[in-house]
Image 1 (cartoon, one colour):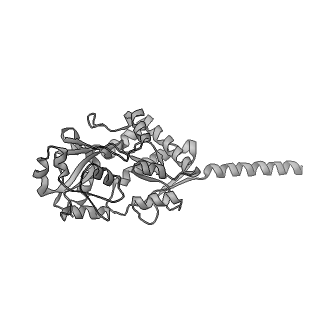
Image 2 (image 1 turned 45 degrees about the vertical axis):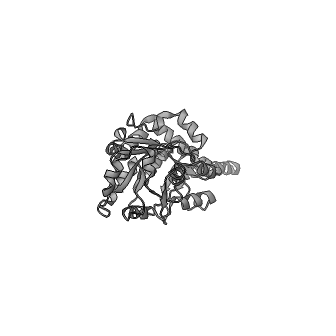
Image 3 (image 1 turned 90 degrees about the vertical axis):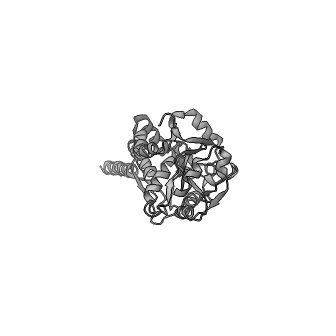
Amino acid sequence: MKRVVVCCILVVAGWVSLAAAAAESTVLVYPRSESASDSQVVYDYELLRQALEATVATHGPYELRPPAAAMNQARAADEIATGSGLVNVLARSTTQEQEQRLLPVRIPIDKGLISYRVFLIRSDMQDRFAAVNTLDDLRGYSVGSYPTWADTRILREAGFKVVTGDSYEGLFRMLVARRFDFFSRSADEAYREYDERRELLPEMRVEDHLLLHFPTTRFFFVRRSDEGTKLAARIEAGLNRMIKDGSFDALFVKYKGPLIERAHLRTRRTFNIENPALSPETLAARKARPELWFDPARGR
């Protein structure tokens, strides 16, 4: 009789252990932006939340939250690389260096929309930019960027004079203060940033006629570790399910569609430059699944 009781206790204990393991949440902590008005991350981490939600049945519950302290992308990447635990997932533009340092989930979360750049300028510069007909004409104007952004290297190697600032918000003030002539932003960033700052910086506007293109995208990144590999696999599985059921495109259109329409990309004068920071793996991924990448000609 005692043996039966002991066996029952062991079985129940086993069930409890399995239930506890099944109920253990996957915890993902993403960086809180230093800028209170930076709303780009709303789309990024809503996409991540939906990808995690799509994998609850197969991977269990999850918790997704920002840390208490704000940080920029460079610091967030450092925290992930060192495994500090402050953050363990990051959405950002990709480079070969970032992909070697961190583990990318190689699905373009913005569908490569960040490849298509329109400009924030001062209102009194519109006529001068409207007269730009060649890439060399455009190189005659200075462009603002942040030191650790991939854009900085891309623009410099393409022959542009790049003026860097010490903060994201500071770059808008530097533009208005005539420290540089234009601020290169993705098609969805420029209009959103203009709307968010139009009262504070009324001298700023979105340029009407020009488009700069270089191939790039944004990925989710995690740490190169066993835990990071598991996180990446879950995120990738969730994103692929969203792509298959159409919810990925639906979210993209909800957040990006109105901004893309305002940018009227198909009617702009387009200049193309190379991206020396793009990895062969990302180029291969783009060729393998072109349907995941935004095409202005199709508008999606």
